[in-house]
Image (cartoon, rainbow, N blue to C red):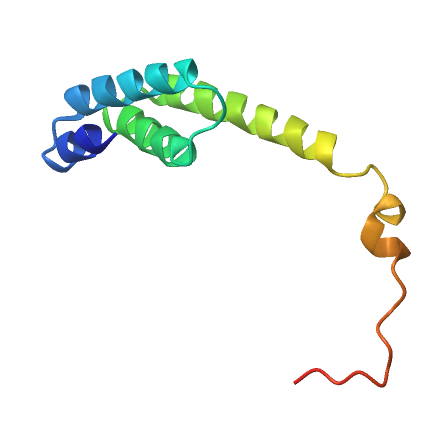
Length: 98
């Protein structure tokens, strides 16, 4: 990813995109999620846009948004009242926040 960022800074976008693609390929082989994956994806999408690959960047971005929305729906309750926070008693009026 660092090499891709360096290439982007030098305005060598095609080489940068190749580096980002290689980094994503390596990430896919790892177990679990890498902490910098979202940043890598952002750099890749921006580089595709700079190269004029707008439809590909847009398609990939929409795919990621659908995945993130599905994940959010799977971990959040459907009704706010089903949330654990909704079942907690309110704070006592005697407690002062400073």
